[in-house]
Image 1: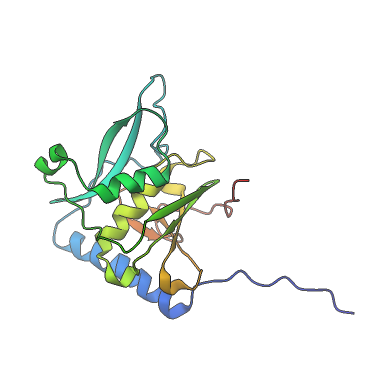
Image 2: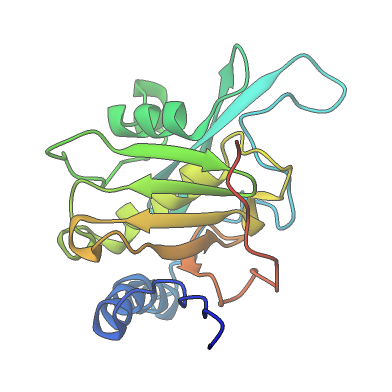
Length: 203
C-alpha cells in the first residue's frame, strides 16, 4: 500500500503571475529611468508602524500615497495600535487636506466592495474587490505598503512582512509581495525579501 502524498500548495497560474509581475515592475523601472525616484522615507529594516514608538506613548500609522517624487509614507498620530484593516480604511479615505497641500495624492480607485485585510504572524492577506489589471501599479504599492507597515503580529520588520494579495480573478490563490525599503510592492523573491520561513496564521 502506497503512503499518501501531500498535495503541493496551490500557486497562481504562470500567466497570471507573469501579468502581476509586469504590472508591478515595469512602471517602477519607468519611474526610475525618468529620474523620478521613489521616496526613501521608509527605512530598510525598520519595525512595522502602527505600534507604539520605543520609549514613548506615541502611536503612528503610515499611510502610503503618491507624491511628485514617487511613493511617500504619510505618518499620522494614532490613539493606539493601528492594524492593517484600519490602515487600509484610512488609505481609502485619501490624503488629508494638509497632506494634499504637500502634493500627496491617492491613485487607489473606488472599489465595488470593501478592501479588507486579515493579519497573521508575519503576514497579512489583502482581499482586492478590483482586479490588479484595472489598477495603476502605484495603487498596488500604496495598498501593499500601507498594510505591511501596520501592526502585524510577529514583530517582523515591515520590509519582511508577506503581503498576500487576493483578487477576484486569482481563484483564491494569492500573489505574495513585500514592501521594499523605497516603498514599492515587489514579488516576495525580489530585493529586500531575504529567505524567511512561511508565516503561520495566528489562532
